[in-house]
Amino acid sequence: MQLKPNILVFFTDQQRWDTLGLNGYPVGLTPNFDRLARQGTFFKHAVSPQPVCGPCRSCLQTGRYASSTGNWCNSAGLSTDVPGLAERFNANGYRTSYFGKWHLSEGTGPGPVPEQNRGGYQDWLAANAVEGVSGPYSCVLYNEKNEEVKLPGYRVDAQTDAMIRYLRERAEEPAEQSRPFLCFHSYLEPHHQNSHDNYPAPEGMEDLYRDAPLPPDLQKLGGTAAEHWTGYCGMIKRLDEALGRTMDALISTGLVENTVVVFLSDHGCHFKTRNAEYKRSPHESSVRVPFAFWGGPWQGGGERHEAARLLDFMPSLLETAGIMIPEGLHGRSLLPLTRNETEGWPDATLIEFGDNTMSPGRAIRTRRWKYAVTAPEEFLNRGRAETYRETFLYDLRSDPYELKNLIGSEAHLPVKHELKEKLLELMRAGGEDACVIEDAPLANVGRCRVEYPSGLASPIPTPSV
Image 1 (cartoon, one colour):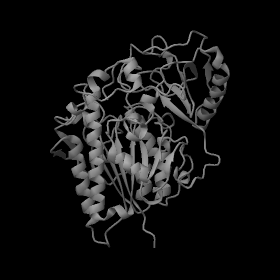
Image 2 (image 1 turned 90 degrees about the vertical axis):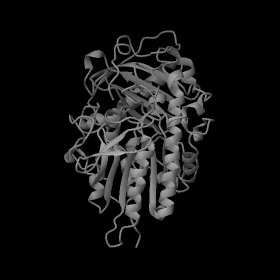
Image 3 (image 1 turned 135 degrees about the vertical axis):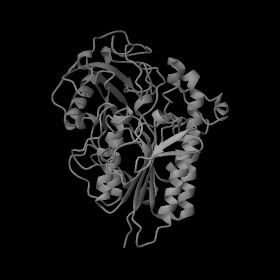
Image 4 (image 1 turned 30 degrees about the vertical axis):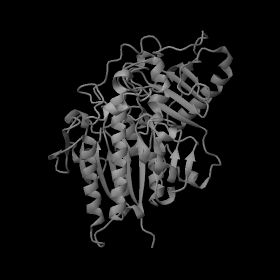
């Protein structure tokens, strides 16, 4: 009899795609990720469906776009209209657990999460917003009884230690009590520490990256990267070491033989180059993320260049576990790509952006193009709009760091028309009503630091999470 696989999710927060060695970063921040992704299946062009913490997390737990579930901003609680990820695994005999940052509990503050707001996860050691209740060396989480649990060490290490103890307990269970598990481990790092607006690496580790090169967009556009990049690198290095420790634990307990591991991040970080804070934009620095699977049927899948979204996470896990994929999900399982079953695979992905600090926007990303539209200010504090205006067009082939906005280029009118029609089609497929997209005026094409239409960028307050 074939055993159902265990699934372990290693989830980072605000990690750029170009911090990976597999994507060309030369400093060696991610040797464990790079090695494992080469053995498994790596989605090189994966994107976040919504580059904000809460909305993206809702997409992972529901398999649907954030605007369709009401989770388009950080203050919204997780939709309970249909069973979520954990509830579907629970119903199929899995033991489900959640560690770390949740960020999907409406109106309960940054700390304890009421049981009814936990998305169905059975074992629990988490906080709604870890950055609001702990610092880099003062990790505080809450157990199933909402009792405060203080964990010693640097926060990444503290959480990893707790997860490894949990894995050991699962490995030592008597056979008659043992069930396959879904363990979702959510780190805060390399997200900034909100209380100090900094990126605190482990003591001494920041010094190792004083000469680490900035990616081209940060070199050109500035922002806060000169101050924060070294700490950001140190945080990512410690996360990669934690990934290595986690794999060592799976090997030493014997769980590795029947465990699938997934690595992903919710969104990237543009270091205040594209708007007044760190994400919430359709640029690659915000939306392109690390995404890889290894173990079980994912071994040997190779480096995939097809369009992949974090919306595909939930159906991919369901198929991995042999659980029926329900109708109504906006994503699709990525597992067929490991078998090179690519016929009919979509060539574009839809990205939603904006939340209660800015007007909603939509973008489409293909292998070559990024086209984005933004709603006028009158739609602020809404997840959807009836009217959008063209704001961005980038040729990712010649301009992968999006330094030249072509939205006003007369020569690109045919491309814009085609992308507009594709975008509207994807929006309809995501459940949106008909809307109007106004053409951008033709203008000189060039580079600018903050590219949102007048009035949409500089007044945005820096959100607390």
